[in-house]
Image (cartoon, rainbow, N blue to C red):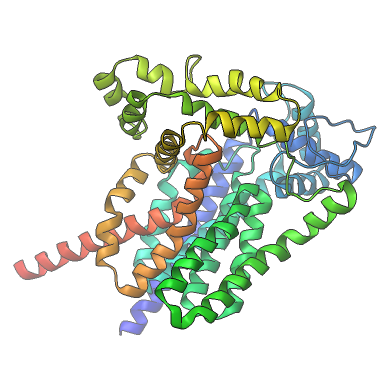
Length: 459
């Protein structure tokens, strides 16, 4: 009887997944694809790849003239998928050409059917991976269904699924990576699953090059594991080696192309990081009062009003995005100062030496504050998940706790990395939707169990 109920539950779960994927696809096709300020540079690179077979960066696209080879300002995967979308559908290609040729407010034909279909598939893969992770973690069907429902409630699922940006691909790759990590953790020290996790990480880095920092950061995790489990040093070393090898294999074609074509070893335009780094280091100009106020200000929904009531209106002007904010100071003032130094290397050296390491303690605290801002994926849902995280971890069994921590660890490390080199907003951390949904699902499951037991006792 119990096996029959489980089978029926699994059928219901599969139906829920199909409905969720259809709902998101309907949202994408009904809403249409918008053009954001960053979209034209992605589109130009994709069209150059489609029209001329040349991978390049920048904003320029001329259908009659091939550009010089270059590096995208961001991940190469977005250029590849836009080129494929243009090749599959002439109307999509015409709409992309219009968008890159005109301003973002031009009345271009925004049909883009092939690109909508690709985004729908990417979001569907993300949702399927989320449910698969939940199945591996919990072993039943109810909590994966709850996790799926919570995932659909995150505003990022809707906000970033219908603009020409890299976020749909990033969601897909983050889902594949977290599923691979969960399987590797459950594999008991076998190297092959970690190789697959490394390959999935390489896929993420092809979308967001910043994720290439994770293999290096994971060396700290390896060192900790070697200290805690010296008897398994060889096993952990092999797992990390397989993980790093998977990343190298995924990156090798792009790195080889960059070296042969451009005599350059790297994943994206060297000057691309200069602008976000300037934006980030502008926040180091804040004082201790703003640093304290920011903890409250960056809380979702009510935090800004609470901080203004406690610290004054000037706090909002400095910590938000307006003309007198630290963000604008970094973007408009600090960036120009860095560019005046000459080369990209000299500009970066100036930024780090004069605006980070000159006040290292405060700079690290500002990084912690910006990491705090980047955590609140889903706004209040993210806040609820963070508040419930410790009680949920304490109540889980040891294998479940290990699995959830394995998901949180790489995501948390990258939240910190993003806070060091960028303005750190929830958009950069959409992978947190997976563990946050799992935490919320487990909390609701517990509440349901307690309510059911109380009703049983009363009966």
